[in-house]
Length: 234
Image (cartoon, rainbow, N blue to C red; front, side, top):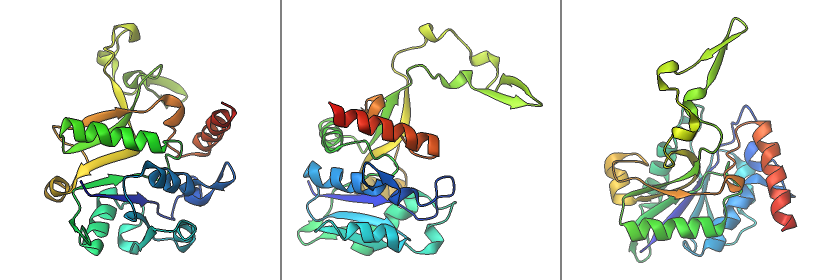
């Protein structure tokens, strides 16, 4: 099976400015994802960094065989979707390599830097074994249950989702997961039809909590740095 990988990383992050090239463990954040994709051994020279930022694209120059694709501004703003980025990649590569069409696409957003090469490889093995069209990485909910979310109004808290959903956390089923944007696998033919990364045949790849950090805030970044330091102490 022929695989192509996209690492989407736009330059306009507002909550963490320059997030995708901010330092994590002595290297730009996006470098961790690029290296994981390379070390997975699944893509050859078919790893593409997609960005509107020259600074981000320049990081890819340090990795021979990694391709760059400049994303236009109209699909790089706050309202741009990852679907747009993938469609732009497939259009500009013709979804082909020298041997013919690609079968599968893997998307690895740069804001989940602790997912590693083995995660990508094991997710692919699950994707192939199940014969599904779509796979998404998840993490177990652990102690944070969604329907217990509280919203503050006028200095007082109330249940955001309403009380009808509340139940003792010990009574919740064990097969509840939180999606995280670390790894997506899709069959390209299905993606071009559906224009989405999920569907009725969506399957999971579960990532351990310590590798599941999805960086949207400085608090997330600090947690990722702590987990990264701990991983290097093992």
